[in-house]
Every structure is written in C-alpha cells, then in structure tokens.
Length: 206
Image (cartoon, rainbow, N blue to C red):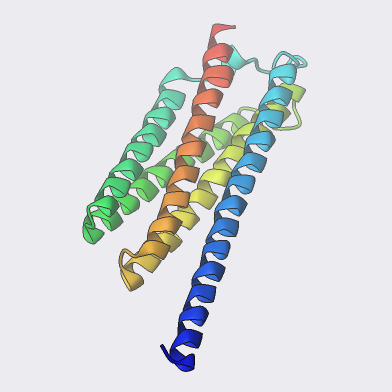
C-alpha cells in the first residue's frame, strides 16, 4: 500500500471517528434535554398538587372539569402515540410513504388535542375562571399550558422530520431524527397520563 493510499485510509478512519463522536454528542444532548423536561414537569405537577385546594372562593376542580372533554383529549393523544408507533414500524420496513402518512396523522391528532384544550381554556375564562382568580387556577393553567406548548413543539419537530423525509428519504440521519422526535412525543403522552390522573381524575373525585 502506497503512502497516498495509507493517508486516505487514515483520513477515512479519522472521519468515521469524528462522525461517531458527533453522534454520541447528539444522543447525549437529546437525553439531557429530555431529563430537563422531566424535571420541569415534575416541578410544575408538584406545585399544582400543593395549590389545587387553594380555590379562594372560586370554582373548584369538581365544578370546572368535564369528564367527556378531558377523556376525548386523552383518547386523541393516546391515538397519536399509536400512529407515531406505526410510523416507526413503517420506517423499520423502509416504507417511506406509509411512514410520512402516519407522521401526518400524528400531527393532525396533536392539532385536534391542542384545539380542544384551547377551547377548554376559552370556555373557562368566559366563565370567570381566569388564571388570576385563584392559586389553583394559576397552577392549572401553568401546567396545562406548559404541556400544550410542548405538544406544539413536538408537532413542529415531527413536521420538520417529515419534510426531510420527503427530500432525503429514509437514511440513518432522518431515521435518527424521527426516532428522537418519536421518543419525545411518547414522553409527552406519558406526562399527559400523569396530568389526566393527578389533575382531572383526582379533581373530579375530590
């Protein structure tokens, strides 16, 4: 092997090493981001749980929450998690069009969820249950609003991956990006299950 060929091999090995290091940093950054979000939601949920009985003469959880509404929200988000899983399955089988279709379905379900939540907030405010009315309502709007904003972020993330898939098809880079976006979407579903249980179900029972 000549000097030129040896140099080419060494350059290729160095490039692979740098590529793996970049991948490791990317994965580590994603998990740090997810861990920070977990801490954020845990803090807000704990704060809400402390404030939930401080209604200050305003509406209580039992008076405010409507079982059909938050049940529908839950069904929409859980269904979106299922369609996201179907997109992952399509990716593993290298079915690009099916993958894009299921991602689009996930985004549509996410939009429906956010739309219902927004209409819920509008209805509460129209009834006088504003964020300033009580400590309970401040905690409630902060928790639900934070989760809703994260769902919007998740939809933007999935949309950007979908655009990249249309341009580049399924490759290691787009697969990694969708895997991370999908994990984030499932994480938001888990957070919603906690909200559904600790905020809505407990609120209706109390």
